[in-house]
Image (tube, rainbow, N blue to C red; front, side, top):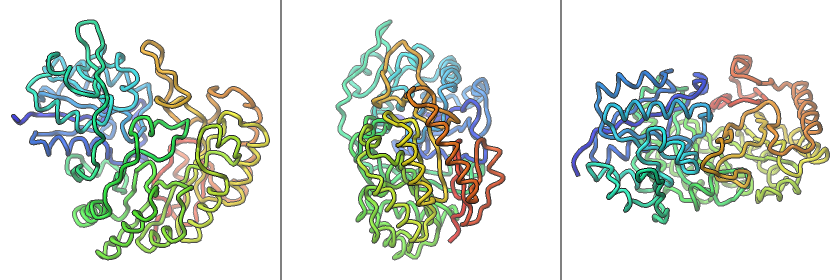
Length: 458
């Protein structure tokens, strides 16, 4: 296969993501590292971190002259707002004018391919991007005659949109290369390195796009994961490492093996992860704490079993209670997230949620309101309608579930007031983070994107 020059872009958010929240774009780096591993020359531009506007890409493509340009959008880490899409399409148009072929992939493009194909993109990848990109890059062009044989994509054949069957075998995630962090300027990001040790989920929560997009849960082997942790510590002096998997603790035995291998190799760093309350295991948390884990996130969503069952979240309030209390007792800071306007929510279920939070007092409480994320039971995909907001950080319900809004708003106000009385800092916008102590004892309730790494000291 002839070596190609490939430009991989993390597009600018609108507005740009707050600097104090920026974590390295691990999904972009994963894709770029795979492309490089296929034998291509790769350049990564993080336009969000560099505060670049779409027009500024002209100078880069003129100088670099890539034959292919790839944009992952809403792939693993959903930080970008839908308002960023016009800018993304403008980037594609400018890149295409410079003679580069354009490819985009991710959850939103999967459901709205025409929005991107009609505005500058040659190909939309509707599945895992890495194997599709390997196949696309084997060709010297994106000719229609070749595209029709590639599984899991959409493209234009004259005025007709063609979507090929998405029956490609799921990727063995152990074959992914360790992401090359030298492809970006790490000084652009907060002092936490990130890692993706698995894809997919074993649950099918009705508000989450993960099951539909990634399919069944697949995990890298413990040795493979610890190899990356060791690389981050030895080569980048990583003092904090965050597992950004949707659910890193799905398999407690696997996580225990990861923790034991970290200890066996004598690796010293502080770790955090997104966990799953229903897979909480006391011995797993003990091993994780012993290996340096100091933070875990659980999606509690609601304190009402009726509400949880209505969105097919296969947990109980008791699962959540046990996970929060047990993790705190093991020395981990606990973040929880709650969706206060799920269907079926009423005054009683709001009170049940408040009681669960106040009884367990997780150090970090994140309040959400429902967004119709693509690929979920709340999303009705069309090719012509407006793309619904994918942003999950709002100060009030967005009307997806229009019932009992007054009870929901009143209940959240009561919770906020009580937590404030208990020493929690209320975070409503990014500027409020300056009021949060970095100590292990700090506590906050947030209505906007939350910082990682607070209180992670060993």
